[in-house]
Length: 313
Image 1: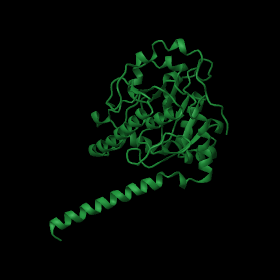
Image 2: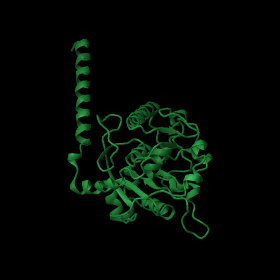
Image 3: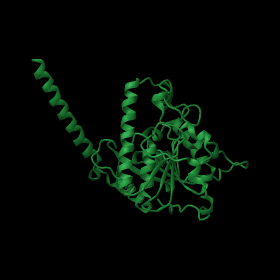
Image 4: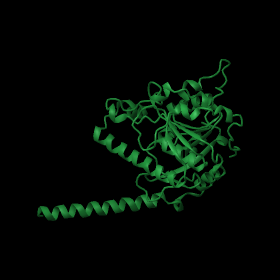
């Protein structure tokens, strides 16, 4: 086959493959394909719609920068955390052994690894529940099944979600937790979606350092030391031992940042400002703001506390 014809054939095949991939994403993202049980479970999230309308919210990642930021003033604010946040010193038990008075409002674990039913994950949940017993947990529908089967969390405090496709690629994205959400490459993206669903405004981001490409020898960095889940071979490999190659990491970060851009566009359309209050880091999609300025004079308005949803199965 002549070179020119070969190039034309390759180009055509790539175009067809791209269209097929987009069609598959659209089909995979469709809510029509949901099982009845999953649809019923995510329907419970409708009660959270607009629950914090007009209230500021803080989506807190686990980046190393929060080691140097005092989060204690956020005790009476709307907070979204994720994964191994229970390791934060604020979550340490009180002297009498009871849970810390500082409790996040919402806790997301939508990565399938966190609900794989393994023994290391069961221990992870044991620590989580001991330190963060008073919040609402978000998992996938598959994760809900695992939690129910292994009795990992009180089900009245667990909400299921459906995430499909890729946020950077699906034609339409929704922030409605009672519908199909776009798949997320970082749990922080889910936190922003949840905050939008609950009507929060403005939204402040913390601990989203996203500086992996500047430190290629370190796969994953957090405010805590060691792996997110002790003894979990796959988590350890991903965070500390994986050698994926710099190009693969560059491409992954590009997808992540495009996802943030789509969220920014969505939030702009809703007139919801999103600010990055992370100390340092590389996330430049959102305008920067000093964390200290977000908590100035908030204590005066915190006496009403946070309206938490009525918990039901």
